[in-house]
Image (cartoon, rainbow, N blue to C red; front, side, top):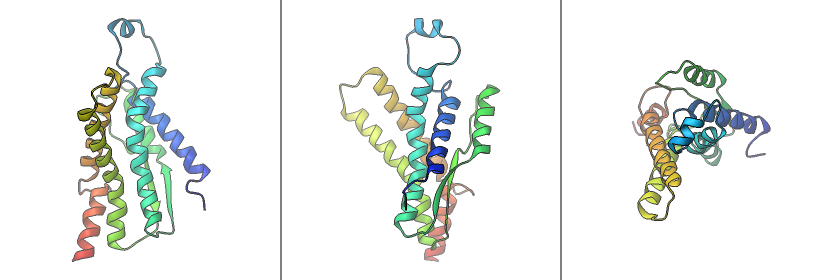
Amino acid sequence: MALLTIKEIFDLVVMTAALGYVFMSYIPKPRTPYQIASQHGFSWEDFKFAVYVTAPAIVLHELMHKFVALAVGLKEAVFHAWYFGLFIGIFLKLIGSPFILFAPGYVSMSEGSPLVTALTAFAGPGTNLLLFLIAGLILNRKTKLTKNQAILLYLTKQINLFLFIFNMLPIPPLDGSKVFYGLFKAFF
């Protein structure tokens, strides 16, 4: 059995492109005032920078749900881009909303025990917590970072902290509700 299907890879590519497009004006690549003044239209540099910041956080979050589910023996765990959620993000960007909140993807999986459910639900936010800690560690330990590297790591740290806290809220359908419900059901 393949770790990822062609459909999952396609959905990951679509989700990554949508994330880059949605966040490119909110997380632009650092530049000089002259570069800002001379820029017009779509910026591939801003798109790439937004992908570098957002895609690892969200892609790894979703893939860890899948890989942990498979590792603990669930028979089915499939990643899906949520096209309606991606549409919401693109729509909010197009209307110039100062507020962007959308769900770009999810993993559908077979039913497991309450403890397995809690573990697979925590895998995504746990990955964001780990990425937050790694980015913070690099920022605190490395002394020879370029300005762009430091900004990229700082933004990576911030987005992963946000995703961890937001996803751990015990509100359905967020991961936190599945973690707390699974733990509660397993121990009580």
